[in-house]
Length: 349
Length: 196
Image 1 (cartoon, chains in turn yellow, orange):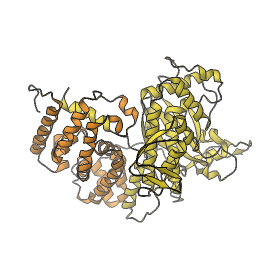
Image 2 (cartoon, chains in turn yellow, cyan):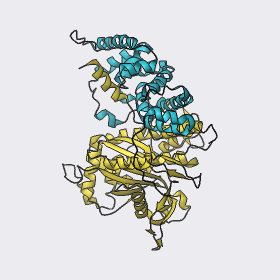
Image 3 (cartoon, chains in turn blue, brown):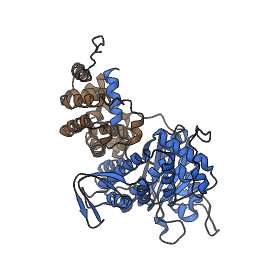
């Protein structure tokens, strides 16, 4: 083999996909472009909750890749779970799939501040061969037109312009689904809502993950105590690690990096769940924190999960191009034509 | 919010964007959207993902600061951006060498890497990897820049010359020297292979 070819292969093995946090570097550039006047906190996807939201992204994307298809098994009987379809099944195998993921901190319509309900909205496109996944984050404070939706108590809420995360507060998964389809023009095959507290459970279901610390941490605030070097941590510790604030440079960027590291560690571990049985039990645990649309072919969904796991899917994480909204600089709006172009590409992939 | 479905105009050249950004600074962000991911991938190979993010951000800040000096007769901004990246990477010269040396000792596993990427990884022969890594670790900075801009960034000789501000002849001689060392390290020197 040619030396340059060998070197290229070697390079590919070292390469990492751009993390979602890269968008912060874009904000940094825009701040500079604005002559430092635009001193607003970088918002991916929003203000002070960014760290927490990024953490939810970790959970959601991980779930999407390995869990989601199988998670759709939720509500099925044990019989389904005991007969995982691992053979070559025809369903969906040759088709691309789009999944809408919502990261939430509680089920819809159970009190609390509605604005805090679906903080994380991700449109995930899986290629037909399952080798590629593109996750597009739609910031929760994006102003969009929410179509007419039916609320849980049966009222009809007329179409209006509001923050995209209001859709979930109004009419749950169905309304969020409709809103995302009408505003992006991308047909969504399945919608899934994942609770943040699911992350710890996912990590535990994986039997813990490995994290590496440059130096020992003893942080009473997050109750995290870890030695320097590698440690195998359980779900609760992993969450504390990811949320850790007063370590490193204390920045959100540092936190997002830790979150991405955690995601990598989870993917790594999940990809090593050898037998389908292990995958199924992992999924079963994860399923407790997930709500999804009904009426799916359960066996086929498990097949899909196995496909994804086998294909070793590569994820690209992006945020929809945005800018501060004209009418309200505390909100954002999608930047056109870039956003439409992105969605068109996504649908074509 | 009304979503405008504006049909795409012909894609604009980098030089147009840079020219526009002189009057309208925020236009520079379009350059970021075009190339940040590509630069990130390149830097992640050389320095790992931890450093890559900040370094890419810094690259665009430097580029932004120098946009007035960009030669607008060059439509493609990649050589310019890779030139800035190369300078910034060279500040991490020791870390880079240490990274390659670490790869000579450990399986690729130890580089925090998503398992997905390994599946398609062409260099499965674990025997080759440490050899390449140690060859890269030992290359002089300038030679390594040239070699990796060609092999990993897919720049042409001319583009590398532009990026590093050196004559094309120097690009060729550095590349030949670097490739020779790589081939020696791999232990399969082929006397019949021409050195372009």
